[in-house]
Length: 196
View (tube, helix red, strand yellow):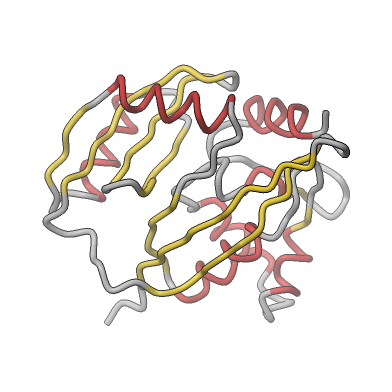
């Protein structure tokens, strides 16, 4: 039996204008009974300061945010992942949401599924403040699996909600950027933006 469990995440954004930084406060991180089956999912493509992105929502919750180099490949993976749901393309909605997220610091509710280990890793990512970075080794320590650095890297790489679950803030212990599922150029752009 799979140990995949759905997550229902709700964050509240506090903006400290004096320090010119955003502090994300995690309000809830809990299991939710709703399954992503027989749901109506809206998806679309949008332009952002970091490149073209793909956003999908179920209700008012973001269930995927990706930066696809090849939209066709991205759509194929998305369709497989949510094959038991009704999928509707809505590019205007995606652009409006992207503008709010990337230009107005809006943090929507999130929904995603993952194994128990992935949940631990993604929760640790949520605790990395904007403008700072952590390491794969440090995340492994924080999740109680100090020897599982490679597994942490895999979990970071499978994060389905880019930017909002900040996998881009994880680097190697030697200071190298490491990998990024959506390309190192995008990772560099996001980190440079957050460091301002």
